[in-house]
Amino acid sequence: MRSCSGPRAAIQKATRRPIDIEADSRTYGAFDELHGAVDPASFADLLQRSANTHHGVVGPEFVQKLIGTFEKSGDQISALIEKRAKTWLGCLAFIPDGQTQRVAKRFAVIGVAGEIATVFGLTGWNKGDALSAAKDGFHDWYDRRYGGLHEELAASVAALKQFMDTHLTGLPMVAGPHGGGEPKGWRDTKFLYLTPKTWVEIFHGADSSKVAHALREAQMLRPEGNRPLRKAPRAIPGRPRLSTLDIERVQAFKAG
Image 1 (cartoon, rainbow, N blue to C red):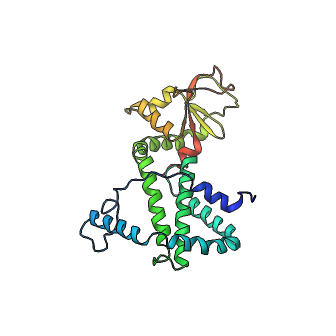
Image 2 (tube, rainbow, N blue to C red):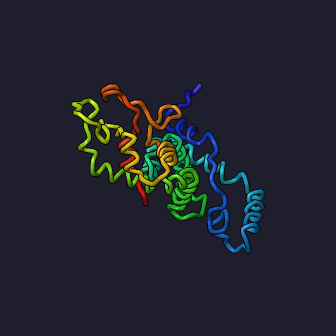
Image 3 (cartoon, rainbow, N blue to C red):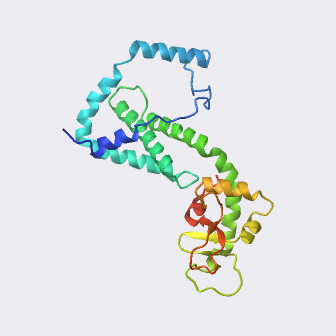
């Protein structure tokens, strides 16, 4: 039996589960254009009738043509999928988690497959249409998943970045040495450790629990179980409970 490995397996794995996206966020609900139909419902009915009449033609033809192409260019196709997904991910407000990376790759598979079908003369689309539609689909999914969180975080992360710009390099390193008195926090190569007093100074007037929850959702704040405060590293005297923030994730956040 031939093993399921390599680029073909990667594409199969990337498309295994359906992705939930909003179907009412376009100009006409689920559609950008009605192509002469009087309303979205009429266009949806037209699509359904056309699919019932003409289904089963393009799909097998695409697969047949793809088989020969994939044997020669499978690695290049896989590389193009990875490159497209990476480009989309690089434009996001947050450093992407595993789920976001997987969803981006699935949409990249769809977009690249559409572009290949266009090259085969099976779609009637212009070059770039399939990838553009796939990118829009990914952004619709991402906005539904993270759009509200992004808006909620914008002011909080701006305050954190301002604090880091002013104080980060002056904070003592976790590994020491440690002088007298309580600093505003500590740092190491990955994390920023803030005292409760400093947290209040940074987010003065904001709901502390809501800020902490949003930062946790964005994986910027590392909790300890259900507690937003985490016990300090052993090198910090007394090991107080501190807000532990991922420096890279905070600095990578894009407000626009």
